[in-house]
Length: 258
Image 1 (cartoon, rainbow, N blue to C red):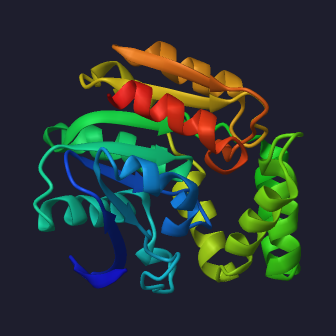
Image 2: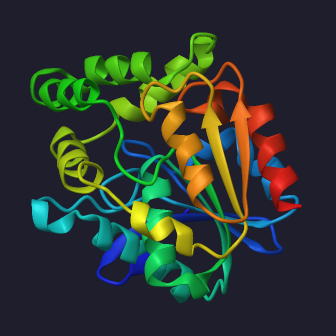
Image 3: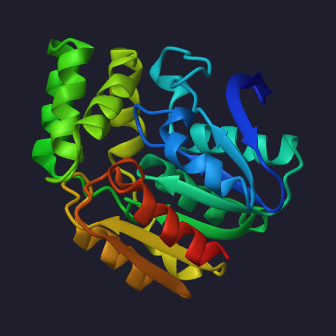
């Protein structure tokens, strides 16, 4: 692990392997440990860089609405790419990480070799009842109970107990105030739909067949709207296929990248 200053914040950045750079960015409430089942094999082929977004993992957790917006969180990642002199990168973003990927490409396409957009969409399409349930729950539940609620929404019907417990443990470590701020300020209102046709790098869109958080249809629409796109559908997986179906997820990623 390596905590260092990027721009005006200390971020936790973890690196493995060598070769072309592959940046991994997690979704809301997670961190770089989300990729535990992936980094060993991915780092055999690539220089893997996994970042804890501000507010999560071991990165700094400033408080206040003014510290959390899509441009601010995306700029943190741009600072990582440029400070570490990674050059054009393969960028794998899941959920919120996919939102950040789209924003970064629209505002600096020279930083990218390819995009891997997993369990994400071109605009916020999380069902209203899911958003409202999360906003209400984050204010009234313990983080343990909140984490269990999110896991029940996020994983597919065939997720094993290990996957459910692991995701719950990661989510339960969050600061509820910061989590709620990111949900309101960054996820809600996200819309990059008018920028998708401008993407010019090879792109993989990956969806979970049973995703209830960002519906499958949103991922399929994303794949249709971006030129030069490959689509991968992970069977029997919900919103976290990299944990639920790690072998199938990895096969799709490496098939696209290699």
